[in-house]
Amino acid sequence: MSELLLECQNLSFSYHTPEGEIPVIRNMNFKIYKGEFVSIVGPSGCGKSTLLNLLTGMLSPEEGFVKMSVSGEEKPRFGYMLQQDHLFEWYDIWKNICIGPKINHCLDAECEQYLKELLKRYGLSAFIHKKPSELSGGMRQRAAIIRTLAMKPELLFLDEPFSSLDYQNRLNAANDIGQIIRKENKTAVLVTHDIGEAISLSSRVLVLSKRPTAVKKEFLLPYRDMNLTPLEIRNTKDFGTHFNAIWKELNNS
Ligand code: ADP
Ligand code: MG
Image (cartoon, rainbow, N blue to C red; front, side, top):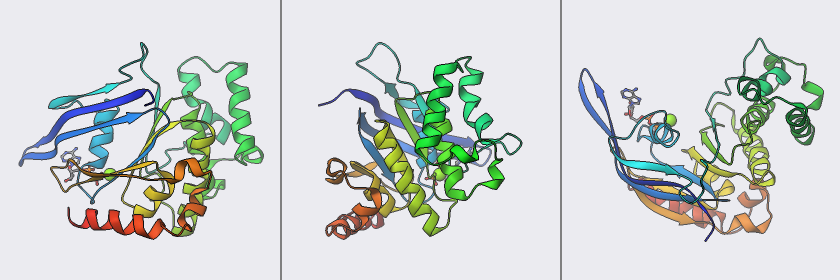
């Protein structure tokens, strides 16, 4: 088994509001290993974004714990990509993707070279001095993932990153970003409510129950080693079988 990067044990969390307590996560357990692409699907409002905020340390658990890189001495660096791309409209694409390294004082010649290579590899070189508003939705998502990769994270957290795009662009953006993550050898945790997206991108899918949520079932998928693109995976003959199995589980939650 490959290296354990993230472990979440007996995790519980509630929001405390003036109207009372909202229990969101109850006794959640799972592990993420290096090289995996794990999608987390669950009903709307069940606590998926809350879970990512707990995994990334933006929120603290009420009970249980989240542990990153239990075997390594150093914490794996992580990147967090949200539903909106949060590109700064007043900066051009180059300045946008340099923000992380600049803030962390590591924007040296090597880093610039790496970022320029990513822009070239993923078809954005000609747009380096354009403002985000001059790019299509799919191109903005590619710029956003390059910005997320700028700090060379080992582990990526993606919270419904394609849901602001229309269907056609969503398929293309998921296809591009799935391939970028695979080529750059990253481990990824994707939150989505789209079963097709989860199957076409992942090596494993975790299905969450309704709030207060926990992992209800996990599905192992065979595609990641087959060297198929996410779009090609959608056309395989057993895609529908996996889709129905996950759909059934999700609807029984
Ligand atoms: P999901 O991402 O699965 O749609 P969220 O994690 O955003 O779900 O929210 C889970 C539940 O917690 C929802 O019922 C939501 O209304 C509630 N919630 C989310 N954020 C807060 C907050 N800051 N304060 C109180 N309740 C919240
Ligand atoms: Mg959410």
